[in-house]
Image (cartoon, rainbow, N blue to C red; front, side):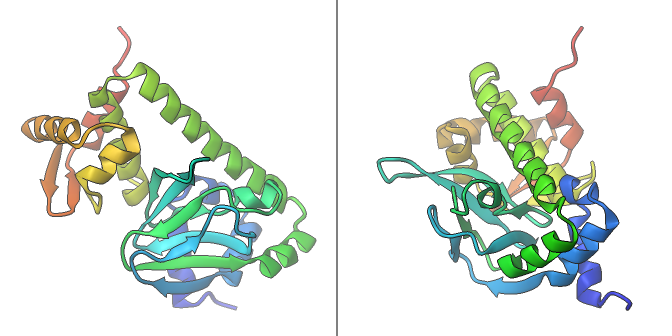
Length: 234
């Protein structure tokens, strides 16, 4: 049976995701076939920390913020995910309970593969859980990289690195892309003051690396940001 237009769109969007693009074709097809699309408004809580896992999530359009809830009840944002992102998998290998809170930032189309569909896929493809373990490991590596960058990199390099990562994630290529991200969000994610982020972004604008707009930042030169974040060794 030929894929539907929606399935074609899902395949194109998820192809941006490095983990998904490396999966066997049969697993890709199964996940796409079982995917449901939910249109949700901004500020919708997809799940909360401690909730029972009911399936796998992704973003078809729009974006979400992932938060970690601290022991004192405070919530700290740790990442913003746009089209092609896949998340909600850690609970599949960590006891079945959500370890983060995820909220939509804007009107979004959310991909959802329910738990019963994952169980059906796993019966035919038992390696599914190993694939999820690899996905969870990739996220752990990302978290470790963020910690290392906060320790070793200057605020300028930290901001350049995060913007470069988001440019690749949103666009899947090396050309210019506009991110629907605000300066205060970047400040929270990086643990920097808004004043510091604003100053660095002005410097980046003067260097023709970015263009700031209303509730958005255009990445004009992703490779230029990458050079700041990861300078070439002499």
